[in-house]
Image (cartoon, rainbow, N blue to C red; front, side, top):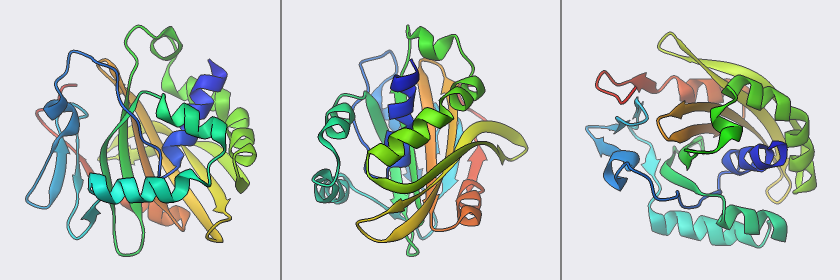
Length: 212
């Protein structure tokens, strides 16, 4: 269980992680959400995100990014990424290269997720997660449990920091993770400073008519 969650956390903190969710009872339109009037809204996830002047990355954009970085990833990471069962429902960035990713993983019937709360899962895997980051090419990798508050509601998560050696850049990624129905929702806000990751998360808001 520890290695499985550890590698999943590595993937969601990487801007280039992607994959496909297993077949489930929720239709694709519901899982992907909608974009209109300057906002992304996903009723199944229960959250909206103020897009404003952010750029939504299309499949073509994302494929170019993925191919450009694929050669930089160790073979083991590539293989896991291709079979992780993680579906990206939103990916966007702004002119300052702040980035947001929302991913969902089908977990119905998986006791390693459904029988343990997310806070315990995250805390029990921090050491393994840091070691995995270092082994897969990220220098000075550190991680700690943090909670993030959205409109008064607290969510479990993690704050990771690491050097991307290929572009000589230190990055921060704030993770929010929670279970919604048959899926685990994994939100990653990435930027060059810790404060900016918090500011990105404050662009989220709760939807009144959600599946919760």
